[in-house]
Length: 366
Figure (tube, rainbow, N blue to C red):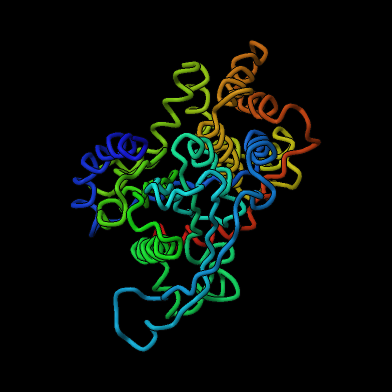
C-alpha cells in the first residue's frame, strides 16, 4: 500500500503547477538573492544541519552526461562527468516490490553543501522502504564540464549549456539509468527539491510526467517571474517579517537608508559612519554600508528560526536602544544585537569574494 499512498499524496501537486509551465517558458525569473550560509544564524545551520561530507549511507556514482540534450551540432555530443549518490539502506528487495524512489534534484551548490536536504528522503525511507537518490546540478561541485566554474562560464560554447532545461534533461537521463541499472522499472519516482531545486522538481514533473509520478517543492518561488509576481516580491516578504515583529523597528529601518545617505554626504561623513558602525575598514561610499545591512536583514528573514529568531533579535536591539538614540544609532544597536557583541569590528567586505554559487547562479538568473 505504500506506493499507493505516495500516488495519492503527490499526484495533486503537479495539477497546481500547470499554469506556471505555460507562463514561464519565455519569461525571465527575477533575481532572487542567494544567501550564502555565512552569517551567525546561517553558520549555526551549517555547523549543526549540514554534514561535512557525504553521509555514509550514500554511495557516490559518476554518469557520463551529454552536454547538450536538444541539438545535433558536433559540440552537442560532448560529455562531462556528473555525480549522483544513492542510499539503499531501506531499499531491500524494493525492486521486486516496486517500492518508490525518492530523488532530490540538486540546486545551485555542490553535493557536499546541499546534503542537508536529503534528510527528508532519509526520514521517509524507513516507512516507504524507498531508495534515496541525490543528483548534483550540472556545473556545480564535481559535475563541471570544465576545471572550474569560471572556466566554464568564460567559454562561449560551454556557457550556453548552463541552464535549467539542460539540468532537467540531466536528471531524466540519470533517473532512467538508475531504474535500468537496479532493475526497478516499475518503481514510481517522486522528485524533491528546495528553493531553486524545488522549482526544478515542479518543472520536472510537468516536463517528464512519464518519469516522475509526483513532485514535492519546498520553499520554491515557482511564481516569481515577470508579469506574474511584482519585482519587489522577495523584499516585500522581508519587510513584512520585520513589520510583524515591530512597527517601530520597521519604521526605523525604512528611515535609515535616507539618513545614511544624508550623513555620508556631509564633510567627513563617511569617516563618521565608519566610526559609528565600527567597520573594520573605512567606508568608501554609503552603498557599502547599505548593502551590508540589506544582506543582514534578508539573511535574518530567510533564516528566521529557533533558537534565536534573528529578526526578533535585530528588532529588540533597535527598539531597546536608549530613548534619545538617533536612527543610525538604533540601526547599529540592532546590528550589535544580531552579532551578539562577539566581533571587535564589522568587516563589511568579508564576503565580497564570490562563491561558486554566487558565480553560477548569477549567470543562471540573468
